[in-house]
Image 1 (tube, chains in turn orange, cyan):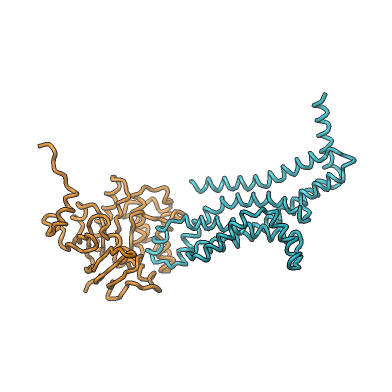
Image 2 (cartoon, each protein chain N blue to C red):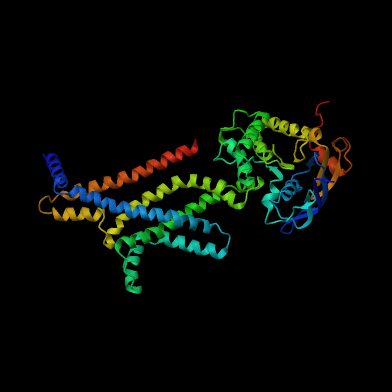
Length: 248
Length: 233
């Protein structure tokens, strides 16, 4: 039984159809990487799963429970679906620890001492043990993004969505964030990752979904997709990331 | 020769403050000014916050009405509004307000408009991503507003509203026209009362009033600067 199931999902902005009949499922502990050209609907797909966008057709199930197009208790669903954004939006008026504690304390009403202990352990794990009392403005982009990941993790979500979490970072900070994701994958976290780092995708994924113009073109193993893409569009897309040597 | 005469005249003009209770009276006038401003500011902050929240509602009618209110309050000179409240209401509706009440009413209506616009700006300056991050950790809309949006709005708002406070304090000098005995009026009374004894005293009285206004407003300007600096850190 799949943990997360997307069935015939359709999403359009006004007349423009962004996602056309998307179906796939995520098993518990599975890491799925979604790749595709920009504007293909990757981010929109994640936003639909987290209920940040309404959908025009299909259903999304989490633990066999319909989670799409709910209005009243969407905030309860979101506690089970963690999401980290490209722009690492920490709350600027709170220090790192309070950023992390806000959700567990206010949304989940959990015990402060326990959550705090957990938060500090996570900070230690992502390499930021001394930043608990720093403010976001004192951190680098990579550090902020790692805090944002910890903030999502401390909610104990059943599945984590990562929406191009390294796209806004300076190149030298990408690694530290991707390492955290790699680490989580090894831990058996269920994750859906949208990324432009193909090497990373190949290394971390159990399954790759190649999305183009709102359709799933390929859904296969990373080895299969990156070595022998089945579709012409997949081949063309992967060519963007390789260069021919100019001088022979 | 000439300069020493001027110096003499100025120093004798200041002597009015050592007669009777003139200086104390002026201070009491300043107190009237400050209390009218203070009551208006407190009311403006309260109603302005509500008005600002209303202004962010995405509804055409609401938006147009609030825009009309804001522009009306900005365009009308405060003096005209004061006359409307003090004389106009009595003439047309038979409602007779005291000068103080009319002043507070007008300054509150004006302050609500200005404050509302500041609150609107501050609310809208909180990026959409902040709301989404709040949603993503499972907060309700109410929790997002209380824990994420409001604190950020207030931080922006405090230094900006200091500017409004000083403008209000200065504008209270108009209330003398609706019969409120405040610092300028008392100054005029002192000048009148000493016309024969110290004919040159007007310069001293107005100079003192100038510094009174200056110091009161300066405190708020300083406060605004400190707050702004702290924000940037």
